[in-house]
Length: 436
Image (cartoon, rainbow, N blue to C red; front, side, top):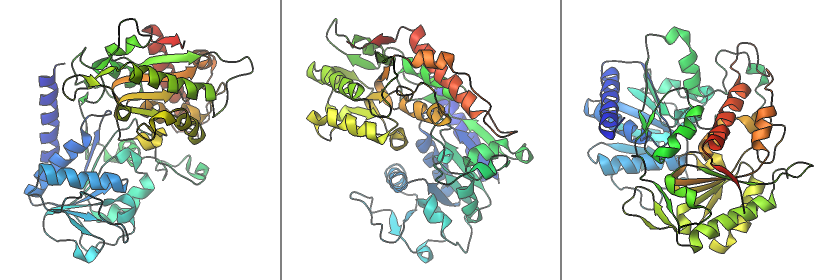
């Protein structure tokens, strides 16, 4: 599929979505692969609806996401009235557009057509006298069904758009009592909506056609995490890292992920904190920066890689602390964080610690697909996966058990399958090699 066809599919989806909502559609759900321009699509659709006279509430999952939506609306659609509805004591960040009204007073929300942007938490604590024409949810797979129900009185019409491959909503209480519920409050809101049989025929469901962030050659590696198809927007052989001839990381030039391994000790790998892997991350970064690697990330001509172009991720905070220490030579210019906090972000180069590196008997937490999916989909030019060398054997020997409640999906089995397919793709394409 070429970019012209992808752009045509994108335009067709946008127009179909606008038409559905303008003509009174009650519920629309749009699935998006990573880096597919979902927030761009959301803003385009909402701007068109405002032009038709709609007053729209927008629910973002974090303050930074809400602020970003406001900035993008002000830049792309300066004639669209927009309000940032914030919590008391939360002040506008530096550089926030002056054309967007900032308020914490619900009585100051205008009754005219326009956008009112707030976090889900803010909306859930606000009583609105006059409902909006539409509630639009950005990053919808990060919103739980319980959170959506707390916002349900904002409107009778809903638009949800997000990446179903991301990490499920964080729930801090015991949810076992709801495991057999058809509408479990801790599940992602779109998951409940899409599984509801009574909504068949009265909802719009679509998916964005392509991933724009990843190199063309990386897209196939993340597809196992999704239940719908999508293409690569970037042409083949255009993204990657160029290194001197014969360099041991030279394979990064072709845009495909590369896994580097360390031997696993007979007694098993270090748990949570693996100092050798942390040091290996430091060596990889030094190899890239000291040789003045050139990055092709789609943002203009190739340029010299800088520390700010590199991101690092591990599932455990204590491991991230060890990684931060190993990368102290470059100060805070290299971001190190958990996959939960990498959601929505990207870097030209990502270095990740495989979630199963320190595990030989995986739990449901370890096999949760969202973490590996996020780790595998943040890069624009190159991904390096660091791990102990037992991962392939661990996945091959693992037999998923039916831990789910009756009638519930087999999350562990699905996670094992996605993990296995990701690793096997690396092996089949010769992308796994010992670190030396």
